[in-house]
Length: 548
Image 1: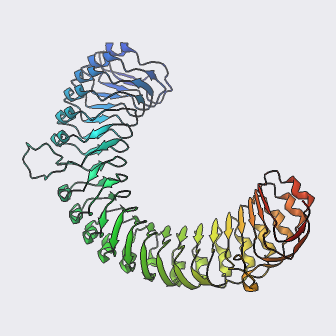
Image 2: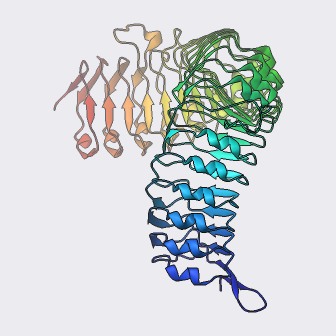
Image 3: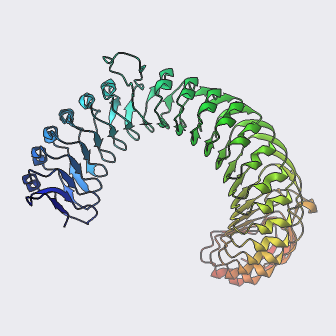
């Protein structure tokens, strides 16, 4: 089993993938001189790769991916004159990549990812004229990308992410003579250079690599300059990942020409100016990530034309104006993150159209007016964060329709939202409920005890507040003892009365219990609190509670 033989019963293929094989790879495997395929991936083999492997000049495919092999790759690997695929990924190999690999002239796929290689990429790799895939990702390789890679005219995938590479990206024009030794990428479809220490700019010549589908240069903090407008010529591009660099300037309007683009990631850069309206032309886009830039102006209504968009993340910028209602016609949208901008105006009632929306984040803007009742129609919502806006009440009863809601936070809004509706008890998936900053008043409804997964309950008024419109009043309902998963109960700066319910002692998961500045909350500390063995914080200052 695992051997395939020809008509002379001579084995030419050994395939024992995922068989939990242990022990060393025996040197005697080289005695199978007619073997063309050696497939032993996803086992538990250890030890060094035997030098005798280089004697197998008839071997076409060698796949030892996903074992525990260690030590250096033997230089004899260059003697494998028929090899087309060599995959040693996901092992614990060390040392440098041997320059003799350039002698294995028939190689088409060289995969050495997820090891512990050091040293530089040998320039001799450029001699592999049939190479279509070179994967060296997740090692500790350093030095510059050798310009000799430009001699690999068949190269389709270059994966170098997660190393310590330095220097610039050695691009050149495809129209240059074949004597050039810089990257021409005649057939390149995937160029992955992320998480290195590359510097310089993205050259304008990149627009000539018209077959490119995936470009990833994320996490090279020393890459600078503008995003070249020529990027719009790469009409086959599906993923453009530029985050975590020092690119500046505007988003070029030519990105609108990328009709096949699925992911645009320009997070954590220094981009400025407004988003071009042409961005709406990317009708196939599924994820638009532009957090943490210096973008200004209004959010273009043309984004509403992105019929396939699932993630829209524009947080930590300086966008202004009202939220275009067209955004709420993105029926496939799952996440909208607009935190920390300067957006204003009411929340559109069209929010209910987003039936697949799971995350809605608008923290620290200037949105005003009521929370629209239509929010109850966005039935897939899991996370709502409306903190630090100018919203006013009431909290719509329709919030109880959001059966999957896990986090609901409306902290520090400038106007009170009224009472907490009893329908809050219908949110059986709720884990965190936060209304800090004096946004609620009235009594805490007994239905709060119907939340079987609640871990955090925070309803605080501002420090020094004496306005009853911004404070909880009345007694703490005994039903709160039904919150068996509760870990944090924070009700500071309110006007609660009565005594602490003895039932609090049933909340065995509680680590944080705070009632600061509830002057009319009195009575002795219930002895039952002694059973709260996980309790780390108990704050009762400026209450009338007695005892120790």
